Length: 251
Image (tube, rainbow, N blue to C red; front, side, top):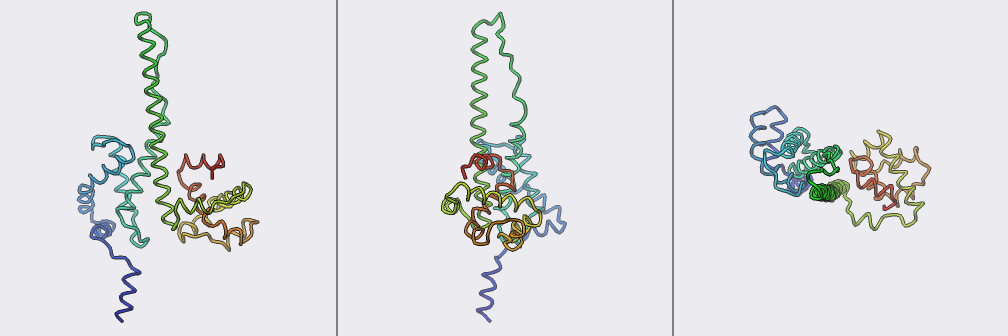
C-alpha cells in the first residue's frame, strides 16, 4: 500500500498554494483574483521588462498588456497539464507583449520632412539625417529583441513536447528534398484541424491518421518525427522570424 501511495504521489504533482488560489479564482472568487493580480504586479513588470529590454513602470502601455495577459493566464490555466502556473503565465505574458510590439512596429514611422528649411541651412539637413539614423538603429534593436524573445518562446513550446534545440540540430534531415518533404508533412499537420488538435493535445504525431493524408512512409515519418513536430510548432504559432528561416531553407 505504501508503495502504491508513493507511486501515486510521483505521478500527480503537488499543487502549490498559488495554484490552489487559481482554482478558487476559476470557481468564482473575484476578490482573491484582485489580490493575486496586485501581489504579482512586480512579477508582471519583471517579465514584461525582460521582453522589452528596459525597465517597465506601471504607467507604461506594455505593463498594461502584461497585466491583461496575466489575468488571461489565470483564467486559462489548467493544473491537469502538469505545468506550474508561474511558468505558464510567463509564457502568456511574453507572447502577448511580443504581439503588441509587433503590432506597434507595423505602424507607419513618424513622418519626417527631409526637405531642408531655408532658414536652417546645412544644420537642418544634418539634424534630419541624425534623426533618421537614430530611428533606423532603434528599429534594428527592436527587431533583434523580438527575435530573441521569439526564440525563447519557441524553446518553451519545444519543452512541452520533450524537445530541445539540440534535438533539432541532430534530427534535421541532411538532404534538401528530405527536409522539404518533412516541412510539407508539418504543413499537413497544422492545416487539418483534427491532426493539429491531436498533435497539441497528445504531444505526439497521430501517425495512423496522418498517413491517410500523406504519401510518406511510416518509417520516414518516425525517423523525422522530432523535426516534423518542431516545424509544426512554428507553423501553428505566431513565429514571424522563424517562419522566414523555414522559407529560406535554414531549417
